[in-house]
Image (cartoon, rainbow, N blue to C red; front, side, top):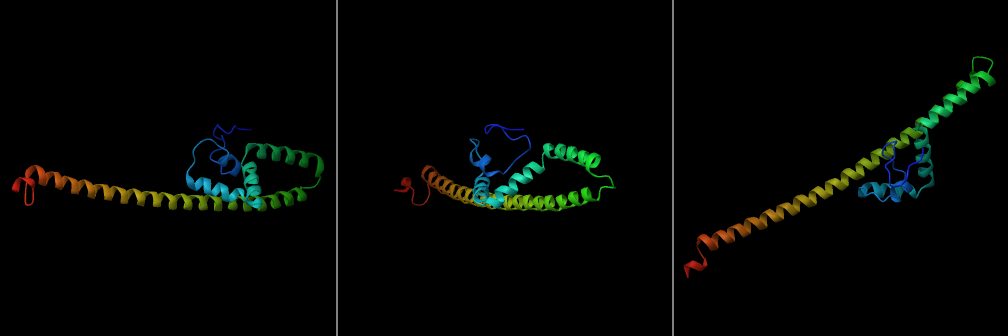
Length: 154
């Protein structure tokens, strides 16, 4: 299954560096930073490719076919070699799952940090604007209604 760069991936959100960075769709700055970081490291790019394939239905169908052929053609005893192969594959796939979880946790932390900084800046801007509006309101009130030091006292 292939998707064009302008269409969202049907598998769900993916953080494959070339997919994110080559996309015309806008992305959160934390997503772009994480994609750039992962795109620079061959091992991370390889892990991303493996976890993307391992999480697809193509992977399931391929394994169902391979296991069926193995059980019917290759093994005559209760499949000790197949059990060993499947166990080893499960060990490696669990490592890739953990790599993916670590990637997701790093992305979530980067996004949370970015969002916090943006919200703090917005709060500061809103506070400054509120103070300026208050000062202008007092100035308008002083000039219109009058009071000590107003133009009407002279």
